[in-house]
Length: 305
View 1: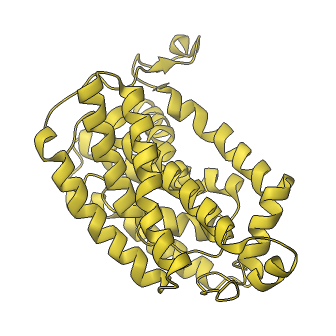
View 2: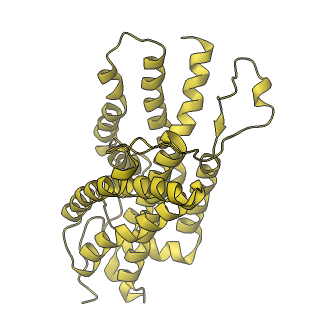
């Protein structure tokens, strides 16, 4: 393995890990409130299609990012209404949201298939280009990549260092106790769902507006399900999610770099790497003794009726 290939993998790991981190942080907050959302894939697709469409219409990629965040937030309210207000099964509601998002994104993005945009501007860390083996495109990222880790720190602070976060964790551990302490359980769940939708919408738009800079149907490639696996990998902790996002971002990058270098390994096998890694993580961490999910995760709470 050449030095340039190693640098390319490291550079790509950071770039492809960023959108996964945003989606994972949203799901961490949602699951801390006791909600498992398997519809992340649908939210990512809606965010990607709306972000690209808004970027084309307005001529501003940042307007596309903002529109995608709002769209993701509003779209996830469908899930929140089903599971919080109507007390529907969370897993079934999440899958329904995924299928709805897949169809809706295809309809929104139909007019923009293959249409390229300028996308978000990229900036290289000052002075890094002078290092040996570093090319102009290596370690050159848009602002969303640079903000990913700081956002994770902010989410950690909100969850573990604020009264809002304490109430959120209380709802995820024991909604009846939280209600007895004066917390509005349904409002906390709605807030968590909106935040999850916001972050997932931004993650989807980052894929279309900043990375691919175009729209194709199903372009998220299962990243919503990988984000759910990353929540388990991170043990529901925002800072550990950074490591998880880099691991899976690295898995994606290895496959791409090997294909670009003319590897004889089948591209279908290389494309399987992130998903095989996902299964491995679930097998290993799923049986870990110290893996303790929020006690009320996936349960329906009827106490406020």
